[in-house]
Structures are given as C-alpha cells and as structure tokens.
Amino acid sequence: MTDKRFIQTSVKPVRLGFLGVGWIGRNRMEAILRSNRAEAVAIADPSEERACEALGLAPDAKIVADLDALLSLDLDGIVIATPSALHAEQSVRALQTGVAVFCQKPLGRSAMEAAAVVAAARSANRFLGVDLSYRYTEGMQRIRDLIRHGELGKVFATDLVFHNAYGPDKSWFYDKSLSGGGCMIDLGVHVIDMALWCLDFPQVTEIDSTLMKAGEPIDKLEDVEDFAVATLTLANGAVIRLTCSWRLQAGCDAVISADFFGTAGGASFKNVNGSFYDFAAQRLRGTAAESLVQPPDDWGGRAAVDWAARLASGQTYDPACERLVDLAKIIDRIYGSVKFSARR
Image 1 (cartoon, one colour):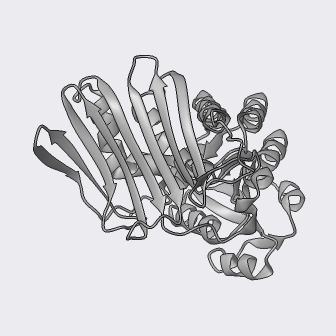
Image 2 (cartoon, one colour; image 1 turned 45 degrees about the vertical axis):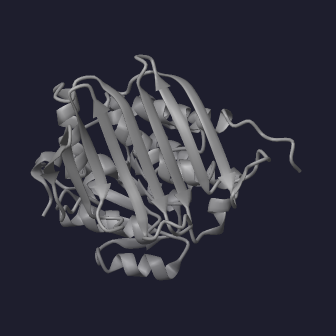
C-alpha cells in the first residue's frame, strides 16, 4: 500500500509514455499504474520481449518504436529507464516537446549534461524528477526529520556505504564514455544524495577520493572503478565519508548504510541481512539504540508515484531539481580529484 505522505490526490490520471521497460522500468511502471495516478498510453523498448511483458501491466497501451514515436503522442509525461548515456539527450528532447520527465539516475554522465536537462525543464516549465528512491524509505524520512529538527545537534560526521556483491550485467556499464563512471556514479550517487538531502544540501568545500579497479588504483582516465572511497569536507567543517563497490567479497548480497553522528546524538540506516530492499533505522544515544523503523517498507516505487501524483495535480517546473546539478558536480569532483599514478 502506498504511503499517503508521498502522494497528493489528483482528479484525472496523467497520460504517460514509458521508454525502457527492463526490470527497473517495468517496476516503476507497475508502481505508478497501481497508484491510479496515471495511465500508460505507450511503451517503447528495443526488446520486443520486454515491451510485450510490460504490456501485460497495461493491456490498453500501444507498443511504439522509439522516443520519436512516443513524443508524437499526446502525453503529459514520460518515464525514462534507458542506459545512462541516453538519459540527458532523451530527457532534453522530451522536455523541449513540452512533456514532463521522470528519469532513472544518473540524470547525466556529467554535471554539464545534468545542467542541460534542468535548463530544458526550466525553459519549458515542465516537471522533472529523478529516481533517487532511497529518499523515500521510511527510515531516511525519519532520520531527516531528526536532523532537520535539530535533535542530533550539529551533525559533524556522516559515514556512507554501498557495496554490491554483484556487478552490472550490461556491457555499457564498463565503458566510461557510456556510463560516466563505475560504482561511484552507479551506487555512490544514491548514498551521497541521501546525506546531502538530510543535511539540507550543504556546501562541499573539499573532496579527496581513491578509485580502484581489480584491487589496484586506476591509472587511466578511461578506467571504470569497481571500488571507491571519497571524503567530502563541508563548509562548516563536517565530514562525509563514502565507500562503495561492485563485486566486493562482502559475505552477503549487499552492505548499504548511512550513519549520522551529531553533538546531541546519532542516527543509523542499514540494510537487514544483506538485503537490497529491507532497511532498519535507529536513533543513537551514547551506548543505547532506539528503533525508529523496521521492515517491511514498500519503498521502491514511491519516487515514481510521487512524481506522477504531483504531475497529475498540476506541478510544473520545480526549482528543487537544480539540486540534481549540485549532486552531479560532486560526482564530477570525486572523479576529478583522482591522482593517476605513473604505472602503465
């Protein structure tokens, strides 16, 4: 059941097109349609098999060839779940046509690409959303409330972790020109966003990072990292430390956490038993821990449902999307702070 805090009521479902209906695209499509905030008008995917599977969720939708075909229809919005190299261009084209966009992360392979999308949304006065879905977990919502209400005092340190014991199964992830990077832009982006969102997007003054591939520091600009460590120093002196990886020998499917330490207490968000989907949150006081949230929590599609509901209620350009450019700039700086060794 969808949490009512994340949606607004609407009078008429919006008409959506779905571009890319692999696992994540189909999952978000199902969540949106289940919310009754939207109807699926058309589906486009290079795989006929995937398109037909998605059609099972919306038998009245039509299968069309591509983005051009989608944009020729009378759509209110488009949900994009395609390879990263296509996100920015496809989003810009949709927005310039007057169609709102909900896109998978990353919005662009660089801050320049992300900024172009935000500029297109602003110019067209259309609603832009990105699937930074961990914001919508009950645990992160509760922790953000604690921080925003000052209950942890000054948060001076944040530890972020996202280890995936598996690697991506698509070849384009390992081509930096197509992906924009490795585990940092794929996984790190989520936990960095979680921290910045909780801390009200503080200014980052200094970044230091180490990127590795197959157990060695990367030594070529085109290398795609499978392990990354970064330290972000904030203008108020606080520090955010981040570690993320693909295929780490972690002893479980995934290790995902965000720990916030303040002068008046702490808060912890962690996955349970190596799960990608189940999370617990705690408030920390000295040696004591108070449970805030325990699974289950059906959070995966909430960002998409919230976008569809706000679109149905008449939402146009939301300046909050400009934070997406700030996030992309930090990722750029993490990659740019790497010092390549002389090894060849």
